[in-house]
Length: 331
Image (spheres, rainbow, N blue to C red):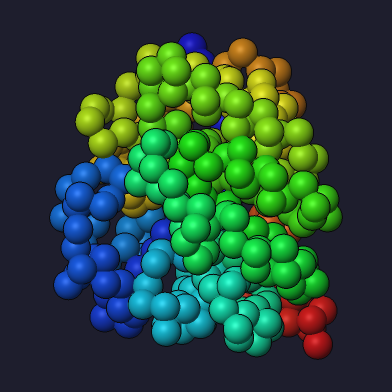
């Protein structure tokens, strides 16, 4: 029987309260044609810490990282403040990846505002990407060829923040070209590099991009969101992808993320953990623990509760203490 993890740091999830923060994609701008998994009506409701805990189904989550959930961009700072309220009241999340338009003229000011919040560890700002591998957006503002990226990434590094990078597999080599000049910037590639084309040619292109990024020692990979638009979540489809990603980056630079509640459109949380445990079963215990827990905790500077203690058993005051301690350290 495949061993399940003793402790999980879920390095990619979302929360939202639709009465507090506006998420246009969950309301008036609903557009299944542009969404990575197609129809998503089931997501158009509140998803709060209690809902996230319920989804775990007893899995031993000890900490979590909230990824900005594409709220109305004018409310990005309000989302961060709301997440800190949730952390103080419920113990979740343990770290925050916020949104800032890194290419905007006021990016420095916006970064300072976000960095002043003690759980903020990283920024997710998506480059402009093509809808298909054969298309090009190289001449569009915000694409990875935009001349503003070097200054933007340097500004991010100066604020002591990481970059959560999300691009589909056909842009991975371009991302590596941009990042070569920033060896001191911590980066995590989201969603396993989005290998949406599972043909032999598609996976070969994905591997080339992954290898280009893995050649940069500051880049890590998140083993998350392996769901596809046109098929159910199947271990036989995703096990080779997970194992290739770990082989390319090494277990020392790989971390687990659920992408809940989005991934719940294809698979339950316990089923996802069991499937990932099977995909990682060829590794030794040290490597598995690193991927499930230790690597994300180190990357996002998370103070973990007692070893093996699920987050739901810890008092809300644990995160309140972290918030207070980090606030003092930034004064």
